[in-house]
Length: 546
Image (tube, rainbow, N blue to C red; front, top):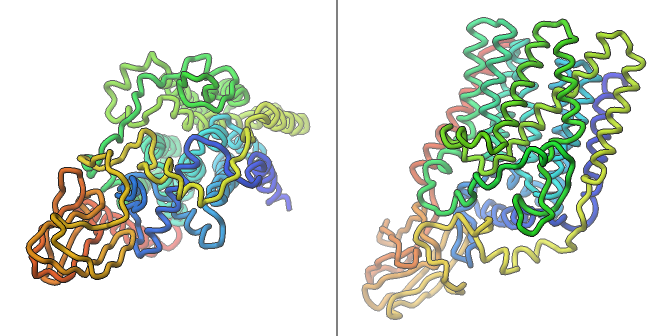
């Protein structure tokens, strides 16, 4: 019982933080409604036979959108699985947030207790669960992808630490898979967390003074995790020029002020909203106190590796804090891809990891002073205070009493590209087009449709053509679309409205248009397959340790 008690305590704190999500309906968040529609579109395409859906057929007034080719997919797979079990997409959205909170808390505990012991690990985990910005992601932003990334990343930090210390093959596999899940969870946080993962991995290797072999395998972990996620990031990166509006935010206008980071606040609005009620950018009262604990423990504790670890995280906290302020603008202009984060305040995700980890140092300081009884009392008080100061943040203002049908039929949601600013439309598409019932039309009424079969990524028409003609498919042109007739493969092009256009001979009797893999998709699929095979090889080649 003593062994599982810490896990039960973490689960209890995590469950309490998301208890309000069991209320019927959807909390009114910035992105929640977008996700419900994406879940529906993803599931529809998945059930049509596309194992990795990339096309959302109903969006963009029915002309379709390649949004699934560019946005993170892990939340969509989870939602489809939960929907298969009978849950609505709205409930799937909430269940994902709940499970990510519970598992994230457990993974954070596993990582932090390596350094701070069981009691310190619990404190770090409670801080992580109740970090204000993580609660912003759940109850204000509704960013399920970020919440999932925040769940899996502590798991990677735990597994890579255990691998370096013990060099067991199971931790090699855990590290690769968990970091891959971070990449699949949220592309922007993946870039942020992966950068930190490199620094942390090399730091752990240095302070543990391991051999060359461990350095090599640790590097392989990082490479394989990128490789497994290749099916996602390769086409998303190299096919960016096919769509417009990927960068619709100006990061220069989203630097929080120092007081916004330090002082408690709460609001349901957007970043830099002109309407007031701006969302919170606070680091968190207890998180800031934890940083001071970390600084104090650096001077009190005697263990050299622990002091180095504390210094690493305090340095990281200071640098990340600086990056969130306007004073760091020159770095944002010169460091490659830094503007990819879109919002400087998004670095609060990294501060959650750093400050929560440092909170566990409180127990180490108490133990060093040989006052465990008082220490446990102090930890209980600290945990209770952590919950109290965030008690107003763990519930939405209200719930939208709507069903899935509302979002998949409402024009405001289904007629757009399902992105802020109606971004991710294919280049050259005429956004003034109206929704149409017909999927195909012929120039000058020179053809008759005898029968048709329409699925999300495949259209089959049996036609009777009076003469040579041009068919216009009422679907936005994207390079992944291909066509063939009863005569064989045929080229398709883009018309003046950005729709698929095909020149047909009068002898054509059947026409099939289908969505397939581009060169970059195939490259990403190959990279993922090769990396998975390599991971399996490593696991089977080495018996227990590496």
